[in-house]
Amino acid sequence: MNKNSIYGLTIEQLTEWLGQHGYKPYRAAQVWNYLYRERVTAFTEMIDIKADCIELLTENFTIQTLREHVKQEASDGTVKFLFKLNDGNLIETVLMRHKYGLSVCVTTQVGCNIGCSFCASGLLTKTRDLSSGEIVEQIMNVQHHLDAAGEGEKVSHIVVMGIGEPFDNFQNMIDFLKIMIDQKGLAIGSRHITVSTSGIVNKMYEFADVNIPVNLALSLHAPNNELRTKIMKINRAFPVEKLMDAINYYIEKTNRRITIEYILLKDVNDHVEEAVELAALFQDKKKKTYINLIPYNPVDEHSQYQRSDQESVLAFYDTLKKNGINCKIRQEHGTDIDAACGQLRSKQIKKDKDQSIKS
Image 1 (cartoon, rainbow, N blue to C red):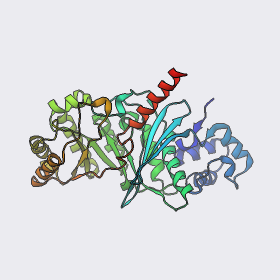
Image 2 (tube, rainbow, N blue to C red; image 1 turned 45 degrees about the vertical axis):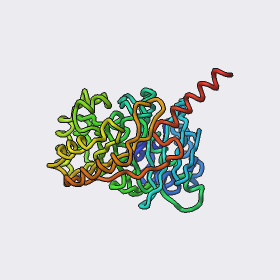
Image 3 (cartoon, rainbow, N blue to C red; image 1 turned 60 degrees about the vertical axis):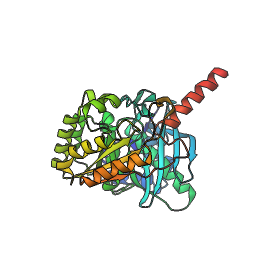
């Protein structure tokens, strides 16, 4: 029987669970400290917790549900991990180095059903959601990797932008966020966490109402319905005008800025005409939006899409700036390894299948 990850419990849930088994709240605080401050890798390392409590935890939970399967390190310090779950599924997690700190991109699902036509993550359809513990454990495994290096480095930023649609795994994602920002745990600042969605409108409203003060990013990638539907099938259910209503609600409810993600695809959505249309779309909310222009990482299976040339990227950027839109061109990481999200996982699954057939 597979045990649940202890990392899947918020401090409130851990306190309640231990309370139901006769332990006072201070015991939960001790366990929490061992997990996130001492960062133990086994319950038996919790040396000042009584043996009966250790036995109870061991019988019901596990600290390790992910195992490192493949690790790629890029020349810029980016590290891409391919983790194997207890059920044999593979997920990706990426550590990126910035001037402002160390950022980790986490995965929320095994595969993805959103089906964006340019994306490596959707090459393999969704098998299941990750538990909150499996999401948390990605951060913990990266932190253990940093701890082992002995440099005293810590994960400081998180982006929920890996494989899968976070809002399609909503409650587990929310629990993950609560665990990450807990001040007696990893204590990652809420402003240092960004959640990305492809635009599940009803969940955008719910996320605004939950009001966890992390950042929200919307993957838009096109300024009109015709073009967006061609490259993102989710637009059939949630067209641009519904997205704009949800953005307006989010801004009004939270008074926070939202980031608009826009991948530039050569001769598809990178013309000055699209830039003008995009600028018009956000003209009335330019103080509360920020457009992130993203160079495309080509994917073998999506050969119809190519990276925009530098001239087109700069023309697009200049057009937005001339129209008063806050924007930037995203800095790239890990370009000398499998840079596109989902690419390493897809290649490894294919490699494993080929080896199985040969054997």
